[in-house]
View 1: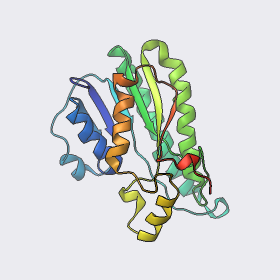
View 2: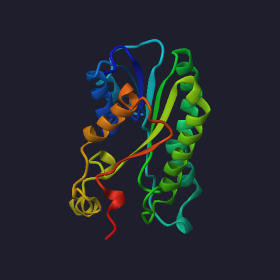
View 3: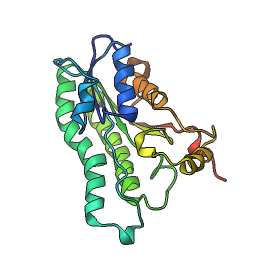
View 4: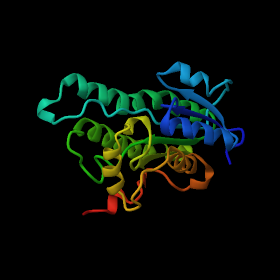
Length: 219
């Protein structure tokens, strides 16, 4: 599906990013990994490649949770830097490389938080992830004629390190979804694979929900 294609994956040392890196490599892609935890990347990566055909910009953090009135400016800045500004800095270099390759696909990991639901204590995260959708839409319009597709992927609750280990919290999150469970990282990675591949050749500027029915469950 992606044989010979070179794809960047950020936030690749664990969770959705690591699952996506393995899945993309299994689909034939040359995968270039980026993350803050170098030791974990070394366990995933062995090669370097030229050119670029796509990128899964997946880096993210929730930051310290709490109401806006008690949130520090440091927390606000950190959450925006990791979730939104990192995407801005990445695409400034990725888009020229995609253009040189004749086109390709960009995917940003956004969230249902700030799009279909607001969760208490997550204002910075919600605002940053919503900002990614706006960035996605503008980039799709600016570069569609260059055969560059841009989409946002909005996962539901996923069993990653970010979800923690509290069984009560996991039970609460499962109940927020129509499927009454959380996703495995590999399930979200498969949605990213779709958006990065030619299987989604007429999909651009979209906020694609892979949220287990979270957005439709209101009870």
